[in-house]
Image (cartoon, rainbow, N blue to C red; front, side, top):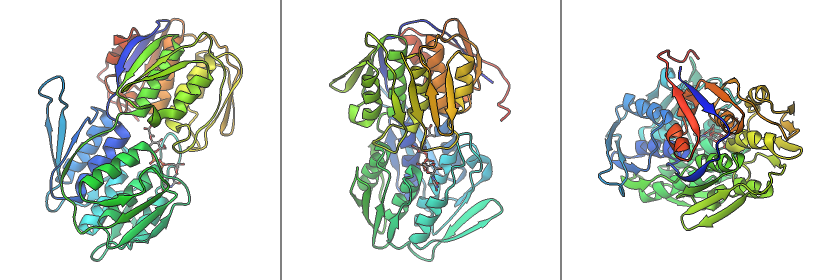
Length: 431
Ligand code: EPZ
């Protein structure tokens, strides 16, 4: 397993181009199952999770071709063609590698009348059931069966529009139901829908494909189902979590980074938290300049669905708050087990007490390098950020977590002054 060696203490200065959003690209790739025509996506990041979904789609007989960028101004493109009859089973071996595989469920059912997907099983950050996906599709007329670790949905003819009230906000369930309802007969209303920018991006692409969805950006989505969808070309939105992570990197190292091609409204809660802590944030055209202020103050944060403070930024702010002046409090309300980075941060000198879903940080910690272990994608980034400011060397193992969600991480960090190296090893991950 590869490891990262980070020597802390360098001030990060310069600019970082933000990649396309992983969590927007994944549902968009699944949307290609809704049509037999090609869906052309640009700005798709090169990440392990994208490769996993590509493997799943190719396993289903979907053709995917990548066109490389021809000059500096153009972008590489993925052309996805699911053809007349894609395979309708998503097997355990691929689904277990990435939970977002469940996003093939809605589109397959809506277009092929049948979908069989392995239940995703356990996850490091929480239970993450899929009951809301299942209940939503049932509301649209699907017959659901659970057997041998698989969930199978079938429908005679087309799904039927319905009123789906989500008892809690779920990004993935909103996406699955949206895609399915696009091809249903009649109107579907999704109430208490997720409002994440990645949902808006999916709606924009589906509408380009001929779907009739209104209510973008609100908690009520109205979908007038159509009989068929066509191909389209779409550029994936920038990754607000990657941008937020680099914003924290600027501030934690006492530096300044220009985040290129990201709009502040996508990450306002993170930017507000940085401003509250004393950083400066200056939107400039298509970019945002984030710089450390003269002091770094404490913060009180609670994770919430968008537009609230993102759970995917919690670990990064935990690292930042541990070196801030004074006591910070961070509450995690989305996932029940998303404090796995805390024991590792403690090993680097952070003083953090956890009581249920609330972490209290004493602040003013002088972090030092240590050997630490990444547990999930964002936890790993929290450790990398702590390592950037720690004295001495930190070795982060299980780097494959970072490879799932941060494109060219070492390259981007090195370009702005970080000392970071990958120690490559041949062993395969054992978990
Ligand atoms: C998406 O996961 C993201 N993944 C996650 O990003 C992100 O942390 C999460 O949304 C929350 O913002 C992708 O977009 C691919 P949810 P998702 O359904 O859709 C509960 C990252 O690091 N729930 O919004 O799986 C669930 O357990 C990742 O990039 C049910 O109870 O999250 C959680 O408590 C990790 N039943 C809450 O809802 C369901 O059927 C929100 O989860 C579905 C969800």
